Length: 258
Image (cartoon, rainbow, N blue to C red; front, top):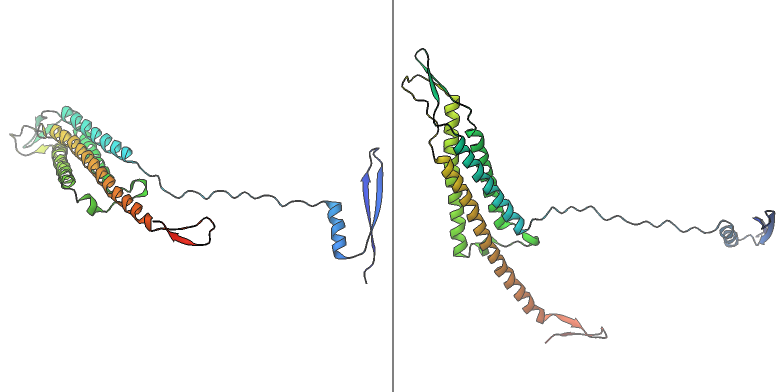
């Protein structure tokens, strides 16, 4: 049996005097809950705004960015190769010893600049190779579509050949100069303390610059192949759109678009 409950509310009047209001409920849970809500007031739950998930996508490169990277690396390789050629001393100074000749060389940064030229040549070539097959705008093109063009195949092989030629012309004098500097004690008393052959580093620098240009030409041809490939794919999609089914204005039936 339910009993009536008295609920006394205390309010502050306009004059600052407290007033009590006695309310009677029938004792039911619903009535008590209603009174409790009236006294305490209902509070809305806090609004939770979900944060966007962290982006996990890697930074995408554009074709313009890749071409700038290839060109910049090629120019740096060329500059360091030219500096290495200009800084190379013509020969060392032989100092006679007991049954040996010690070669004394002046300050020679040839090995340092030659190594930097080789490093930037490798960076330019790797960037050039990757740029041909990179999925720009998230779209990948099969290699068969690229190598379908004879012109692309020609310039791709020329770029590879010129890269190998530049690496040979840069590595040969750089390694030779390093050996001359580290192995400067000779038992041949007639030695003249030679240095690396003149002209190889300069030639390698120009070959390195040429290789980056050939990679850029290959990239332009790859761009043309991508446009042709995706252009044909888009035309096929437009052709297939004629077979789509759409709903009528009432949303009751489907009919093919003619």
